[in-house]
Amino acid sequence: MEIVWTYFAPLHADAATQMAVDALLLEQYAQTSHQAVLRFYSMNPPAVTIGRNQRWADVVDPSLCCQRGWEWARRPTGGGALLHRHELNYAVVVSHDVVPQSLENAFRATFGWVAQGLASGLAKLGFEPHVHQGRSGTAMEGRPRSAHGLCEHSLTRYEISIAGRKAVASAQLNLPGAWLQHGTIYLEAPGPDDRFCQHSPGNVPGTNQAGWWSLPPDLGSKAARWARLANALRDGIAGSITREAVFGRSFLAMVARQKAVWEQSNWHNWR
Image 1 (cartoon, rainbow, N blue to C red):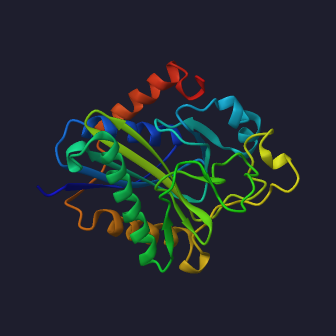
Image 2 (image 1 turned 60 degrees about the horizontal axis):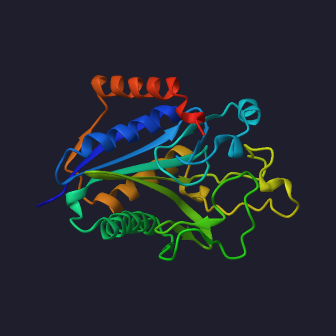
């Protein structure tokens, strides 16, 4: 049976909204069969997202973020802290029957498949991406820890590097019925001063070298690079799209309710 791909038009919104959208898409598509979703988005205003199981006080300094006008939000997925500023984010949701295998094999097949799609899209732009196949948490060779608390000093399985630098950061979540993977590619890599935690390793001499790859500026303006990257990744991941959609009022109302639930339960700061 052919996979039905739905592509949602890009959404540029605050971090809590984006995380609620991804969480709700996962819930909705867990009830479907042979369905897949692809979308691209950015955070406005800039924000820090932290993994589902991180202690926010360990990785986010509210005063630093407020000084810079940055928000912060907890992701429904795991992984480490990420700064979302001058970047493209993607989300892929896939129903389980797209990869009818055991849970462990389905994880490898699904996210290996997404990673190969991302790599294919990056290759279309003339780059040489490498999909990490080793164990999660493998240290980047010769790469000191981050100056700002970011997670680029190691690679998780199926993340991607280019020229020895981390190019794609990704995180996953499984529900009965569907998988979610979302991730980030920088148009402009964070610099040593883009710190969002006072006690990050960046305060240690010799650790201010960032390990992120970013999309070269010779591909055009930031808007042009964002669009070119999105189009290349769309072709690499999904090939032909079955249908295109926008988020309607009813879905956005659900997003608002999810955000309210998270706010009332102190979800973003709960740990």
